[in-house]
Image (tube, rainbow, N blue to C red; front, top):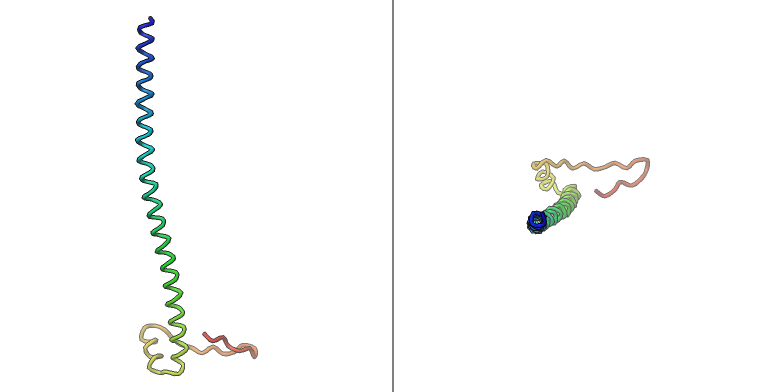
Length: 100
């Protein structure tokens, strides 16, 4: 009986040891995947920030070009060829129109 119990204890210990090694291997793999995912998130956020800044700059450039096109017919025609219509805002209730 003691011999059987010893063998069962040895078998249980070996199973526990194998499971512990398996968990370490899985944890290592998960850490690698998490690092890759964090790297991808960083790249996406950097791309989004770049896109926002580029959009703001482009908007400001088109706005400035529209302002300049009020005095330059060729520039106004160029903007119209690319789908931009320049309109002068009329003041509302005696207020000054914003310089957009």
